[in-house]
Length: 321
Image (tube, rainbow, N blue to C red; front, side, top):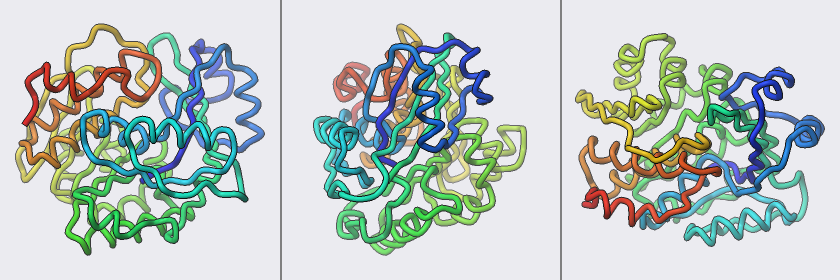
């Protein structure tokens, strides 16, 4: 469950990012007027459906999992693009396009020469997801409910997150949550902290984990977060990832890759691979290796969704259950 977003990706110089007063590598929420100003400054761009949890859903479908996405779009051009793309990826999406309200969300992504991405997001109607949009039976039937962190933090979507978590817990499903972005953690740490005890599986990168734990040292962050959630998976960029599950700490290297083009969706795809291992009841190390494999494919090209079949890559790597 997350925001339905259409990404607009453009190779951009570092100066463009700095010129808008943005911190490279983070996500900033902008209004429609600011989004138009930034869009006008971009060079040639590529449009692709995105959204953090939606990217994870697409990767899970590519791995062969049965997955459904809950989000909200308008009946506009970007909404049509989003619905077409996520359904063609093999993901079920059944929330009807809305006929009134803000437009479908979009994310302007500036990809600098070091392959880092800086995102400016206009959430549009996705920020108006409400409990009435939930199919509680679908959540109850799932093995895992996965939530993007952008949904939570003193915003209207807090209520839908709590309703979804309650439905999952009532059905005995696992609840997985991604911290999503360092700046989001800094802004909404208090609110997210109140949610952590309801989370079974927490995803974060190193900066997000340290920010959430209130420390600048990753081992201390892992220890603190591991006391709150039964499984914590933290990505470390080129150094791979580390997982704490049941007091056990497992480190896994990054998967080999032929090129680094665009880090957009790296954490989303890692979460997909890890979750695929979880639903197939794999050990933490194998879950992390699946996450690393999925992330390596996604960051090898422009865009946050796989271009190759992740199921085929898993089979070729001998990582299947």
